Image 1 (cartoon, rainbow, N blue to C red):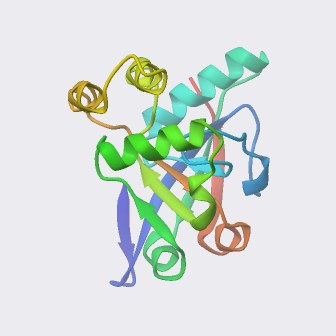
Image 2: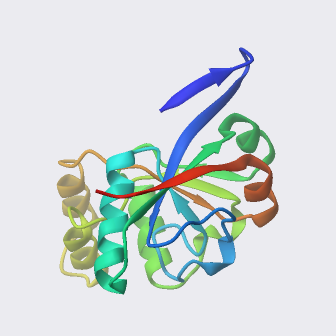
Image 3: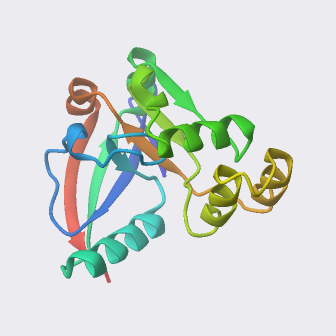
Length: 172
């Protein structure tokens, strides 16, 4: 949820679902071929971070934890090379497919924000990637879903400068 301090700079509370406290995020530890490439993923939707932490905990047999941060988003966006996807559209679909194929379209960016290729839409993406569905049909199916939101920080120095750790809590 965005809030304003000092009347000028937009700061946003964001979350990272995990099985450990992440007080010093490291962009290079992410997995290859994710939606927006290898980076540190956060969201401004707490329920989404909760789901991510629970899924991660089930895979790793750990305790789900939600890490909380303040993102100095306006300042970051003034300095960073950013890509913002506002919808599940053709540009988003092509970017996700390129990422999943290992083509690394995120290499030119410091910050990317947009919808998540999650369980609600992954079947459509997989059918499109395998050639079993046209882009027109895939986009029609994607239009039925309201995108969740994810942000990927890809530049370590900008992450260190604009993402401030606020604390963590056990996910319930």
